[in-house]
Length: 246
Length: 317
Image 1 (cartoon, helix red, strand yellow):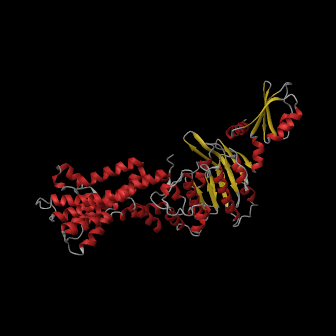
Image 2: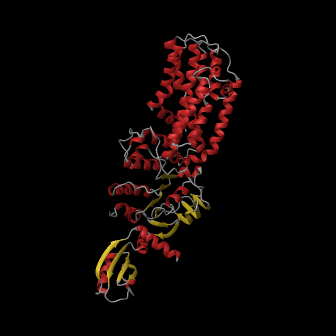
Image 3: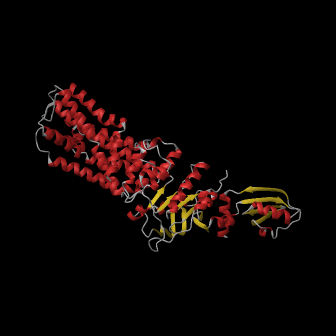
């Protein structure tokens, strides 16, 4: 299973279009937003704008890396018949899905690391040394619900549909979850919705750490609940995974 | 298109005794599978012994792929039972001992042939050496090729490599040579001959009787979801009557024509007679000797589909 996991990660890292989308975009957005809003005083998280936006864009890229590595790829593998072929090997379906989940999680890392590097090199961001590895780890781990949501999308939607659905999910979660702009500028009804989203709680986790606080248990619990919900629905639909599409 | 028997066919040797007890390689018992109103597989029973090379022969829609899919545990019979070396299809034990080429089996996009085979190899207890797999599947030198940038023939060879890499005791091949030209097909069956010499069992599907004849030591013929014949290739050929002699007669009466050497059955439409033959050369010589009044003689092949339908109708009657 380790070799399969490794190969899943490798094939994503080889995909330049994918990397540009999930790592290039957040880094570019970080540099743009932190330059435009870098001196604004209307930040809400009690953090320097360069730090707040760094965490937001790292979370944004991480979420995209995970969603796009799981959803569209699973749909494609299902349609190509690769999943049927893989089902004929001794690798059990549970292990196949576990490996794909872990691979998708690992693909949160390029965006997180590259955004942090850009923040340090270009925007002179400094944080206590211990906060860096913790931030990487917590944002990556916080992407667990997105890995399950991606697998769910890849299970129920086909090819282009899965690609489109994933992108819509990605952008809605980012915009409503407060990764692009503070949730406070949304109408109050939308704010209520926003505060239930996993993307909102992912950013909150990171901002807690950047403020030097311990990650909040409440945020982690919401993320776990989203993971459990998506995973359960995906499991119920998993019979579709090896059905013939022809 | 003609397909000449090659060395591969005659290399098929006698069936070795079952190496580990009584369980046959494949046991299918009264299996039925429906898709909506369509009866894809209708009460099929068959047994494959260790070391046998068996062809599942039939036209499109005969139920071959559905049967194979059930043998592999990719779909379940509505009724009836299937055992692979005594285990349920799709079980861990079955996956470890069966290698398969699917018609719609895809490969992992974005990786290299060498990477893919190395990964799949690591999933088995006692796999073949990578070098040996590349050799048999004629993929040597292509290890660094991306699997999503292969030609049709190369993809098919990769499917074969994927089926072989775990050194399976049973190889299940769904129309393995469908995309191959005659020469490639011959090379393919030559390689498979080496595989069965090691006591391995092969079950493959095809819609070419010629191919079943060359490669298999037993043919199970399917039509409309049912097994309509089961026997040696030559027995099947004789019962099907794959060529037809059409001729006109001056004196009515076709009695005794179907008993001519090489003939299977005779039917008359007015003064035009149709003689189904297992060996049209022999039958033609005998016919000319027996019926000097036969004229306007033509010899033609029959589409296998027609032959199947004849047999199925015969069974239904």
